[in-house]
Image (tube, rainbow, N blue to C red; front, side, top):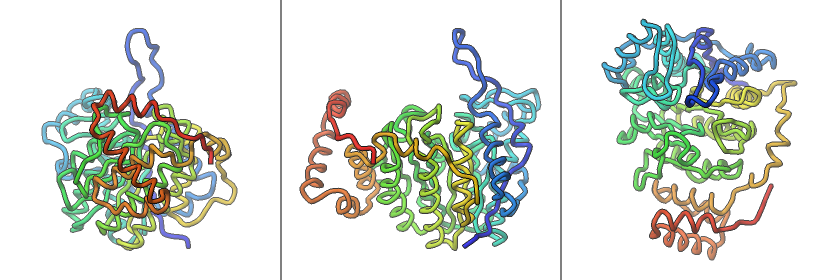
Length: 405
């Protein structure tokens, strides 16, 4: 079934200028990771694969001051505007932009708002917003991690305030923790926020498991996690949490930096895994909110591989695959060792499900027998009572059977 999939993309997004990247006097400056190429290449592949003509173009508008202030502070918004008018600068931590950066960043946020309008009005069934700069790291009073304004947080508050929605789910599978989005929603029972990310990658010290919080759920996966770990996290945490929450709209922070070749992550995902996550999220949207789901582009820094991940997600939203375009790297990704769910990954997923008060029986029944489930509980209890240093030593000493399934 082909669906009416909206597509937000503006040439001005490609004009965002984060400058070069350098880490000190003795490191030669190089091209910034958050450059235009990965986004431009997604758009190019959508066009050359003949998928783009099947999409419904949604034109972005600039988010206005009222939109921005639903999440950001007055002082921060004024600071970014002033810096932009005077040649650019850094909005906080690794959040650089050039002249006109304010206008581009508001157009990025406004692109997601336009998608919210289109989905709410029924012009399209769902949407992919190929916006830039990204947003999920931006805090109320400062930019972080290449992000100026928090596109998803702004869109969520807009959906509530203007579109009258009460329950919005925000799912973030970018390899880096969505710290800004967590700040926005951690204490809001009307927003379900779930972040699947590499444990303690960026920002360091954020993204830990939150015990007892049913609507703000962090899944800090171990470095090296592959397809099995992400599928298990979706099956036993993400989907059950969405089904319990019953959202009226789903927003997705769609970062492709958990791919097996990304320079800023140490995960092992292929485009197939991103296709699977999009499928599960789209089906959840069908069950709870008439298919209303919007993907908002975040990170992903492999110029060669990000386009295939983006194509897979858009194909899943559309309900149709390209006739000829195919990910030639799937066999290599699938052949990597430890792609299957590993015992320590399962323990982590069970710990997250328990902290979020989700039913553990499905995970235990599928992967563990009664004896193994009991053993896992005992091991978790022992580890929880150890000091951090001792716990790390025990975990590093554990060995698990190799599997490339």
